[in-house]
Structure formats: structure tokens, C-alpha cells
Length: 156
Image 1 (cartoon, helix red, strand yellow):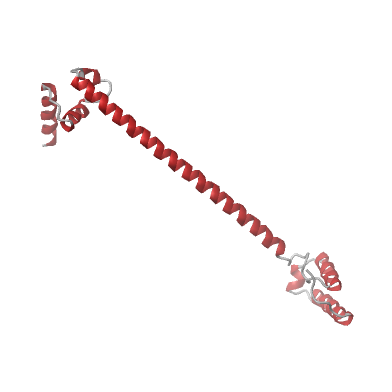
Image 2 (cartoon, one colour):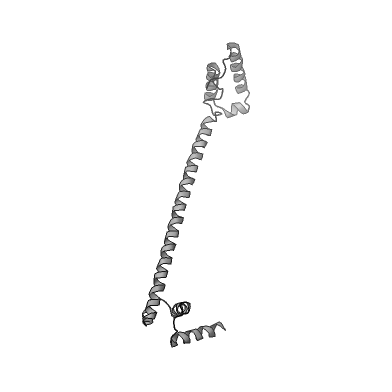
């Protein structure tokens, strides 16, 4: 990172102007340290960019921000992948639950058809049994009819 070569008199003029600027107690003098002044003088003598290695050298900050941005992008990518994985897991669980509900429905139908619907008391409520019977066109018992009448009375 070298700038074009400057002649000795130009360098001397730049060094003198730099000393004057620092002696004025202005913004530049307030923003930089004596170490920065020494670095800037060395940079002038070596034909390097004047602010290289000083507080005003933003290349390190830019590089750090680029590194942080890259890390942030990596984190976002990881979070999105984790979210996608969780969404897939939720879908898998929903499919499993739906499968279990279908198994329960089939078992209830077989239990009702076998005339053992009293065995369903621990598995589900009476309203669900009636609903299933109506959906599957299974015959209603007298207790089913009484329960339906009570439900209809409550709805009025």
C-alpha cells in the first residue's frame, strides 16, 4: 500500500505543516495523540498513507465491522436452519397426532360395532361417541338419544 513517491522538499513541507496543525489545538490535534503524530510523520517519510496506523485509520474498523457482519450473517443462517428444522419437526408431530387420532377413531368404531361402547368411557366423552356415530351412520342407543335431547335443550 504505497503512495506515489514524493520528493524530499515536499515531505519536509508536509512534516512542517503537520507540526503546525498539531500546535494550533484544533480538531485534528484534539482527535489524535502524539503517538499518532509520530506515526503520521513516519508515514510521510515512508510514502505510506498518512493516517495508516493512527486513530483515523478506519481500515481496521471497517475490517472488524465486515467480520462482525459476516458472523451476524452466519448466525442468521444458523437460526433460519434451526427454525426450518423445528418447523419440519412440528409438521412431523402434527402428522403423528393426526395418525393417532385416526387410530383412535377406528378403534372407537370397532368398539361401538362390537357393542362395547361402555369401554370408551375412559377414552372419550359421550358427545364424541355420539358425533362419531352420526358421522359413520352407526345406530344411536337410548342413552345417546337422551344425551342429544339434553344438548338440544341447552342450545335453545
